Amino acid sequence: MKKILIILLCSFIFFACQKQQQKTIILSKASSNYIKWMEDDNTIILDAYTIQNTDSILALADGIILTGGEDINPLEYNDTANIKVCGTINFSRDTLERKLFDFAFKNKLPLVGVCRGMQMMNVASGGTLYGDIPSEIGTTVIHRNNGEVIHDVVVVCNNYSYIQMIFPQDIMISYRQDTFTVNSWHHQGIKDIADGIQVIAESYDGLPEAVVMDKNLHPFMIAVQFHPERLGKNNGIYQTMKKSFYNEISK
Image (cartoon, rainbow, N blue to C red):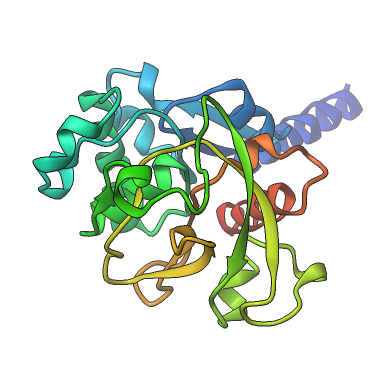
């Protein structure tokens, strides 16, 4: 009997420890690709978009991901002219993602932005966007063509500690010589960079494709304009960004 009680006690302690090790990731709006990218045996993933009381889940958050989606309302960055070139605008999502960003920034929570998520990170930090890339900066690089397209990006930052949060280290060459092939599906893009945000990579038309928040302002905020969650599990960027994020939420 005593032996059974000891076994039960050990089992309870083991499962309690396992529960304590679980991490909670909040997605601003979930899809199967983001879930597959971030899922792990010790991770709980919550979809903020489907939960009415956001405050109830923010207290649980170990990390936040601002996902891709609709255009950001130009009024979010005080631009009335760009409203006419926008596609679908989701006002409630703009409000939600600002709230998620502000919470992550204030509480030093790790944050990853993808596509629209990178744009929101810039806008919420005081930056602006191009409302429609083809009409404003041209078509040197095609960023969207009735669906997803492929193009190259080049690393334009020489701060290696920032670069390695996003891009795989084993194929790095040197400043402004490293190129990576990525996917793309957007027509808005970062115009004026917010203070405190460092551009890590650009496409060949000069559009920011990867950014990092200054570590003096926040320990871990990274974002990309492309879609790492759709690059595939064997892709170096897919793996590097996930590993970087998990390292941070596990601290």
